[in-house]
Amino acid sequence: MTRKPLSYYQSIPEETLRNRIDSIRRRMGARLRILVHYYQKEEILAIADDVGDSYGLSAAASKSGCEVILFCGVRFMAETADILANAKREGNRRVTVVSPNPDAGCRMADMATLAELENAWRLLGEAVGTEGLVPVTYVNSSAEVKAFCGKHGGYACTSSNALAVMRRVFANPDSRVFFLPDQQLGRNVAAWMGFPPEQVFSYHGGNSVVKTNVQQLVRDGFLPAGSVEELTPAAELDRDAVGAAKVILWDGFCPLHQRFTVEQIDRARRARPDVKVVVHPECPREVVARSDEAGSTKKILDLVAAAEDASVWAIGTERRMVEALQRDFPTKTILPLSDEMPMCHSMNTITLASVCRALEGIESGYPDGVVTVEREIAQPALLALERMLQCKG
Image (tube, rainbow, N blue to C red):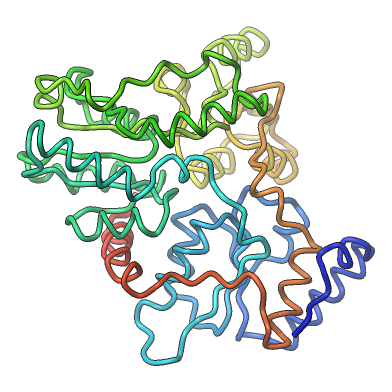
């Protein structure tokens, strides 16, 4: 079936798009569920059945009970929804997961490929062995990376429960963790658990994918030249340092959260001595250490919601989230930690036009943007995700 292009929907007035979306939702009823990440635009948040962070939306997908999920987020989130929503389904009774933009990726997830991970596992095995080494992948990763972790007794995690996952792993004192792809979240959790710096090793073996992403980010003007330290080739692994490590970190990062600095925190406190600074744990370690609080998107929301009226907050996370807090809590002063207000551009590609197009395709029985994880990948990835869901933050 030939579908109208996105450009056709982009020419439709927003009010008409909303009406068409609402009509489809009424006709489909409980057969359809729309999951929306906190980082989406206000008009996308307004049409959600469930709004949440990665952990919350993963849990919602696992309990969806619908026929179709429209996932307004980035690709790894839609992949996770497909795996969890179909985990207990049999035969052809699958939940169809659709993304309004299936090409919406994640720079951090792109910094760890299965091939690079398999090579890293081999190199670490040659250096110190993989006995007791547990791979833990941040949910911001591909289904293939999650499947690798599932096959090797590992876990997925979110920023909401990364500490709980690490505590579960280290209930066995002989365990070590290979944490990927976000070095900052891994480093922050290791510090919260009390591991000294000499027990945290930065593995730079993934530089072929990480460097490519860093170079592109610098070219795009998203990161300044020299903002990321020079990466060490995997061939130069320090066996003594690896052997002493309890936590081994991949060298990926979130370009958005990498932009927050201690200078911004100091400036915020000079301007407002009564300010409370809260940042996402994808921020660099020194930024998290200088802040008053650090936590997942949901934790940031809960902290601000529970705070007294007239309290002052400087928030170090994505622009749309800061704007939502400003709208939802007008009796509190919500300030962006950075004047630039960094935004997740992949999330920003989801629009009312793309949602309307996706929903009309779903209703017609010819949806575009279907995200399907093949069974041989989904099954081991499910192991890592189910272990994740068992660990509440």
